[in-house]
Structures are given as C-alpha cells and as structure tokens.
Amino acid sequence: MLPLAVESHWMTSSPTTSFAPLAGDVTADVVVVGAGIAGISTAWELARKGLDVVVLEADRVAAGVTGHTTAKLTALHTLAYSHVEETFGRDAARLYATSQQEAVDHVATVAEELGIDCELERCPAFTYAPVHRPDHDVRAEAEAAARAGLAASYVTETDLPYAVAGAVRVEDQLQFHPRKYLLGLVDDLVRRGGRVHERSRVTDLKEGGPCVVTTESGATVRAADVVVTTHYPVFDRALLFARLSVKRALVIGAAIPEAAAPEGMYITTEDNTRSIRTAPLAPGERLLIVTGEHVDPGEHDVLDHFRRLADWTTAMFPSARITHRWATQDTSSLDGVPYVGRLHVGARHAWVATGFGGWGMSGGVMAGRLLGDLVTGAEPEWAGLYDPRRIKPLTEAGPVLGQMAKVVRHFVGDRLTSHVDSVDDIPPGAGALTRVDGQRCAVYRDPEGSLHAVSATCTHLGCLVGFNAAETAWECPCHGSRFAVDGAVLQGPATAPLETVRTGEPGKD
Ligand SMILES: Cc1cc2nc3c(=O)[nH]c(=O)nc-3n(C[C@H](O)[C@H](O)[C@H](O)COP(=O)(O)OP(=O)(O)OC[C@H]3O[C@@H](n4cnc5c(N)ncnc54)[C@H](O)[C@@H]3O)c2cc1C
Ligand code: FES
Image (cartoon, rainbow, N blue to C red; front, side):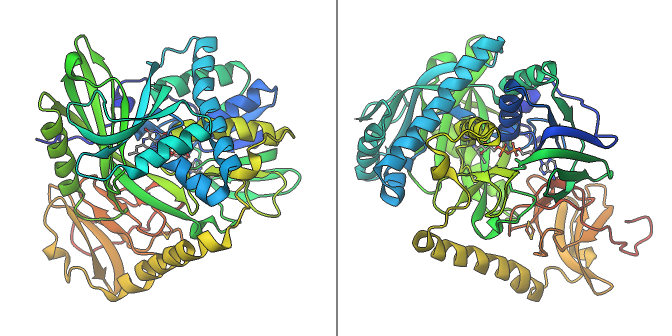
C-alpha cells in the first residue's frame, strides 16, 4: 500500500528554515541565485574566501531537488567513466574522477571541521548488472574507473539479498543526510556574514559592472558576480534550453530491520534504473531508499509508476514496510558532463552550475569548489572539462535536434489535441486541459468538487502543461517547470505563475 502523503524523509527529519525575504536594495561581492546543494556549496566556499555573499532562494533552502534526492555521495556515477573516456579521452576521465572524489572527501572534512552531524557513513558504491543481463558494460566500467584513478574493481558478490550478474565496486564512498549537512553550511555561512533570503524569487538579471538581479518584489542585489544555481537555469543566454533534458524519478522509503539492510549503495545499469541505499531510522531499523521509474514531467500515470516501484521494493526486500514516497527531477547535459562555469560565451561575471544528470551530490559540491575558484580568479585543472561553453558538434547535434523536436511537439502538437470537452468531464481529484471561453485552460477539480482553472500555457516558453495526479501539480514537459493548482510556480525555469482563469461556474475560480 502506498502512503497517501508525498513527503521526503530528508524534509521531515530535519529542521525547517525561516530567513526573511529580500526587502530592499543591497550590494554584495557575489549574489548566488538558488539555494540547493550547488548554490549553498558555492556561497559557503566564497564566504570562506572572505567574500561578501548574498543568497536568494525562491522557496526554502535545500528544499528543492536537493531536499528530495537519494543522497548517495559518490564518484561512481553508473557507467560515467566508460562514457567520459570515450567522449573526451582518458585525461578527461581522470579529471572527472579526481574532481568528484575530491568533492566526496571534502564533505567529510568540512562536516568534521564544522561539527555537522549529517549521518555521514563510509561505504562502498556499486553499479550492478541485474542477473538476467550481460555484464560486459560493468566489467568495462570497472576498468575505466580504475584507469581514471578510483579504487574500483569488478566483483560478482554484493550484500544485496539477491544475485547480480556482476558489478563495479568502488571503496570509501559516502552516504549522508543532505539537508543536515547543508543547513550546517548555511549556519556557518551566516556566521561568516553571508546573507540568506528565502521567498525571494529572482525574475531578472542584468549583467555588467556591477551585475543586478531583481526579485519578484522589485528588490535588487548589485554585485560584482552572479552565480545561477537554480537547478534549471532561469536565465538562458547560453541557450542551455536546447542542451539540457529533464527527467523525473520516483522514490520509495521503507522501514527495514537493520540485519536485512545492505551496507553498500547500489545502482543498476538499466535505463529504468533502480538506485538503493539505506539511512538511519530508529533503533534496530533503517530506512531503505529505492529510486527508479523515470517519467517525463506532466506524465499522467505517475501513480502506476509509484506502485511498480513499491512492488519491486517489497519483492526484492520482503521485510520492507513502505513508509514514504516522494519524487523529484534532474537535468542532464547532452554529453553527460555537468555545465559548471561561465553562463555564456561573452560572460565575464555571470556563472552557472547545472546538468548534474542524477549525480548532483558530489557534482554540486564539486561545482561549489570549482565556482569558488573561478570567481576568485583561480582555475583548477578540470575547469575546461565542465566549461558550459564547450560545444561538441558531433555528439550534440542529434540530442539538440531531439530536444527541439520534443519542444515543438508539446508547443504545436498539444495545441491540436483537445483533452476534455467540458469541465463537467473532470472528476474530483483530477485535472485536464479544456477550453473555457475559447482559451486553453488547465482545470483541476478538488476532492470537494470546486474547480481551479489556470492558463494551460507555460509561462517559460509557451508549451502546454500536463497534470500529475500523483503529486497534484501541473508540469511542463518541455523544460520541467512545475506549478501548483492555483498556478503558483513550484519549480523553474518558469519565474511567473500560470494566469488564473474564471470558469464562469458560480462559486468557482
Ligand atoms: C530521484 C533522484 C535521486 C537522486 N539521487 C542522487 C544521489 O543519490 N546522488 C547524487 O549525487 N545525486 C542524486 N540526484 C541528483 C541530485 O539530487 C541533484 O543533481 C541536485 O540535488 C541538484 O542540486 P541543485 O542545487 O542544482 O538544485 P536544487 O536543489 O533544486 O536547488 C535549486 C534551488 O534554486 C531555487 N530557485 C529556482 N528558481 C529560482 C529563482 N528564480 N530565484 C531564486 N531561487 C530559485 C529552487 O527553489 C531551489 O531551491 C538525484 C536526483 C533525482 C531526481
Ligand atoms: S516551456 Fe520551458 S518549462 Fe515550460
């Protein structure tokens, strides 16, 4: 049975925050826009170097994708080393490994230095081929990861309660509570004079000397440098929209007896992957966290995917008692390496970190370290590997065209499709697209029967939204913007809400 509430364990097992919104015009050395793991890590690294930093967060700190992740902190990223070696060469794979492992170790050092209790546990990380699949790709990955410098080996034994065909094993990785770690960093950032403002959505950026960012309320920050860490970049001078894709993934949490809990962290090689770890829960019990079932934003059958993931969890771990479900999404770059560096070709003081491809724990910390250096004029060896201005015409042409075709389909194609003819066809708890006075609307009927109608046109670039009934949200399939049923922005790149529409029914919106 699935839990009714969609709630992340990380969110419910850590304190809430309450920083005042930005109320007036201020100045700083650097303004960081977006306070997930990438933004908080960057702000903290810069404050530690003595810079005056302002952080602007649309919602609450560490409550976006970072508050809903699986939080495996590892340099083993499924089959990344075979891919990076093939696409960029062996030196690049070595730089990838060094920068990601450095980020993993950095978290342990900082947590100890600041005395942050973030449930840090050392354990091995595995990428495994399921028993019915060939294992040649994990064999090749073990070799590539070892060549890149990781403590990697090929194994056939794991501590999972079922057999695998073969696996890459990398020693000395970490799992942690991401919010407890990041809230500790935020405390230290504030102690160092950093200013953090929540409920301060940024709607405009003017680059120059200084750069100026403006929030919804009209308040501004003038700063020499601006760092955009909003997950999907809300300002797109580099046309990253064509070079980023978004996938949602679902998470199941289940209480499991400590004796039945695997010690390692696991991920499968399949497209519709399964990712597994455990976390402390209660005496004698651990929380088994299983991630999988990739879906597009706006897909309507998300509940079925949740059921499939829950069934898989209890089939593989018969003692598991399901307690949680939640979901989130991540962006992927076209060539599988995150974009961290200057925001666009002409940028001098505007920076970005995005495209972590499901590996933004080590990736976000690495981005904080890299941007901390770049903003202050240093250039680590791996800066070029992550530079967003890189273009690989041969590898990127196909995916760019695919991404554009997808946008055109949702922009034009969906406009040709009628969803329901009348709001009367929408049952309680459901949402659908329909026309109200000729206008294409996204209409939700709540469990009490009241209608909530908003424009169906995403305020980002105009695609049509779809209803996710499992999480009661309108989602845009093009770049993943998400909206509440009253149209409020839940997740960017959109910065403006969906417009409210009056349905004309008495007592209704
Ligand atoms: C299901 C799932 C499981 C995952 N598991 C792992 C894992 O085990 N290990 C791993 O390494 N990675 C994992 N990842 C990936 C990782 O969670 C992400 O890459 C990472 O959390 C992204 O961090 P971020 O800081 O870029 O984004 P976020 O955490 O989303 O932070 C961006 C912040 O910007 C704010 N914002 C947005 N727009 C604005 C605006 N206009 N103005 C101001 N603020 C704004 C948002 O509110 C948000 O707080 C997983 C991803 C998914 C989807
Ligand atoms: S059109 Fe880009 S997120 Fe909707």
